Image 1 (cartoon, rainbow, N blue to C red):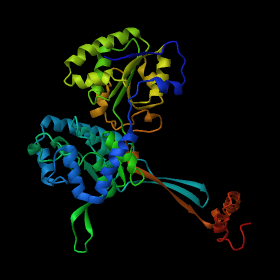
Image 2 (image 1 turned 180 degrees about the horizontal axis):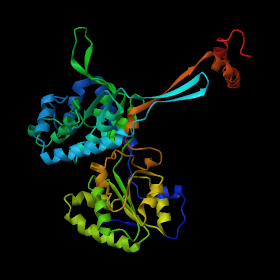
Image 3 (image 1 turned 90 degrees about the vertical axis):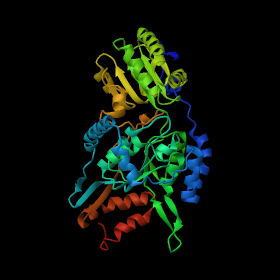
Length: 452
C-alpha cells in the first residue's frame, strides 16, 4: 500500500534530499491556462459571470450570491448542539493563542531628536476562502476568521462554494455548518461562490447588474486587499495570477503529514495519523521517517488493517500508494532530522525518545506536534494553533496563517533639524555614491547656510 525508500548508509545533502523525498506533482502553471478565462469572466461580466461559473463548476445557480442574514441565523439555530459546543471550544482556544500574537508599536530613539516608530496596522479588508468540495470545513472558518479579527481587520468577507448535493435543502448556499460557524464568529458577509471565481470576485469586486441612476454599476462586493485560506489547485492558480492586485497568504497544495519516529513509537498511533491526513484528498501526502525497520513493518501492517476499516478507504489507499507518500528508512534520528528538514512538511509529528528536544532541533515545518498525545487532528480543530499552513516544501521560507498575516509594519520617521543636520553629510555622500545627487540636494535645501 505504501512504498519504502531506504536512505540508510547514504550521506545526502539538503539539495539532494529534496530531490528524493516523496512529493506530490502539482502543476499550478498548467492550471493557470484554465483559470485565466475564469478570472476574465468575473472581471468583465460581474454578477452574471459569477452565476454562470457557479452553475458550470458547482452544478447550482445560487438564488443569492450573498448569503442572506436569515440563512446565517437559521444555520446557527439548527446546528447540532454537540457541533456548536465543539466549534465554540475551537474558537475559544484559537482566540487565546492568536490574541497573544498581536504586536505592539515600538519607538526607537536613534539619536536625540531622531525617532523611528514601527506601527502595526491591520489590512483594511480581507477575503477569506473556505473550501467545500469533498468535505465540509467549518474549522477553516475558525482558522481564517479568528486571526483576522484579533489583528483588528475591520472588513472581512467569507466565500465558500454553493452546495450541489440536494440543492433544495441547501438552497444553493454554502453548507449550513459553514454558515453556522460564520454566524458564531459574527461574520455577516458571506458569499456562495467557490473556486477561482471567488478569488477573482475578491480581487475585482462584484458589480450589481442594475446600474444606479448615473449609469455606474454599484458594487455588491467591494474588492479586498488580501485573500487567505486553502483551496484546490484552481484556487491556488487564481491566487498566483492575481497576486499583486491582491495580497495572498500562500499557494496551498495538497495536505501533508510527516512523522519522525524511532522504535519507541506506537505503530497504531503512527498509522492512524498517516491515515487521518490521507483521507483529505487522493493527492494528500503521508510520510514516515524512521530509523526502525521493525516500526516500519509494524506500521505497514497497521495500515493494511486500519485502512480497511476507515470510511474513505478508497481515497486513503490512493493517497498512501501514490508517489507523494512513503516510509523513509534512515540510519538514526539525526539523519531523520535532515530528511524532515529537507521535506519541510506542512505538519510534522515527532514520536521519539525525548521528543521535545528532538522537535526543538527541527528548522522546517509548518507546525510541529510533539509526542504521542499531540496528533495533527488536534491541531486541525482544538489545539489553539492555526491549521492554514505552508505546503509543498514552502515551510522552509513561509509561516502558517497568524495575526501577523493580517498586519503591516509601517515605519514612521520623525527627525528634528538638529538630528537631520548631524547626519546630513552622510546622506549626501551616499546619494552621490549612488549617482542620485537630487537625493542629497533634498537634504541640502533645508540648510541654506550649508551642512558643515
